[in-house]
Amino acid sequence: MQKKEFVEKLAEKLESTKADAEKNLNAVFELITEVICQGEEFAMPGFGKFASKDQPERKGRNPGTGAEITISAKISPVFKAAIQLKNAVNQKSS
Image (cartoon, rainbow, N blue to C red; front, side):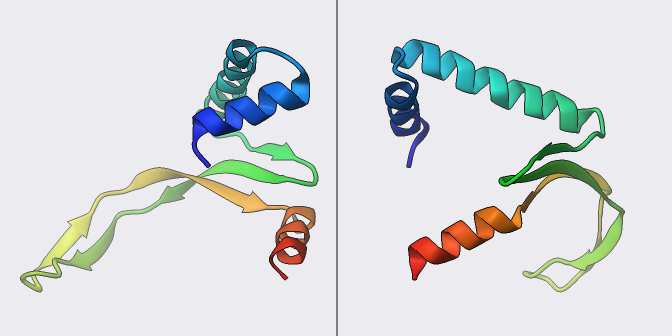
């Protein structure tokens, strides 16, 4: 599902306009981004937890040449699904 389709369904559920639904959705994404950029976790009970994770510098190999390279340290966004979400997905796919 693309964002456009999601916004349409959200507008139907909220009984609002597509413009308002998209504005609200963008605000939610911006807030989640701000929280995890500050190094905090954002937990939504029954859905999951958004956080950031430090990944230290590590050694790797260039798959084309086999030469050893250094992969820089970075911070990555992570999401861990709540058990309720996992169960819901498993029930729908069965």
